[in-house]
Image: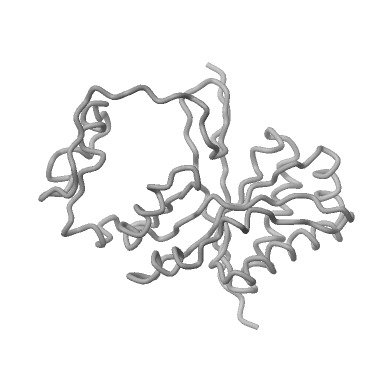
Length: 236
C-alpha cells in the first residue's frame, strides 16, 4: 500500500473585527448601492501592469476594477505557489468564476457539506450533498488538473459530542471513515476541514490528535486534507 506524503495546508482566515468568526456563511447585511462605476471585462492588460497589486489598494480601485481581467491570461496560472478558492452556493457568480479562472487555482473548495453527529455513538452524517453539481465539477477540471476539495464544517455538535470524538478511539474511527467513504463516493480529491474554531481554542492537543488520525486515513486513500486554522485573538 502506497501512502501519500502528509499534506495539511493551513489556511489563515484574517479578520478585522474584534470578535472572530472564521466560518464562511451567507451575510444578512443589505448591500448599499455603489456609486463607483465598474469596468466591464475583459481588459487588455494584467492587474500587475495596471499597478493594482499593492499593499494598500483603494476601495475605488477595487470597485472600479474587480470585474476587469485580462482575457488572454484568464486560464493561465501566473502565481507560482498553491492557491485555494472557495465557492459558495449563495453567490451564483462564484460558480461561473471558478469555471473561467479554474486553471489559476490549485484547489477549488465548494462550500457544500456539513458533518453532523448521527443517532448512534459512532455514526455520523454528512449533509449538503444535494448541492453537489458533477457537471460543474467536470467543467472546472476540464482545462487543467484542479483539485476539488469541498469544505466540510462540523455542524450541530454539542460539547458532549466533541468530548466523545476526542476521547473515544472508536468514535474517532467512525468519524474518519464517514469522511473517507463520502469523498470516495463522489470522487472528490479531498476536503477542507473546518473544525478548529469550534472549540474556541480549547482542547487543541486532543483535536490535533484527531486531525492527524483523519489525515492518515485520508492520505491512505489518496485524499488531501486542508485544515482551516484561524489566527489567534491577541489582546492589545
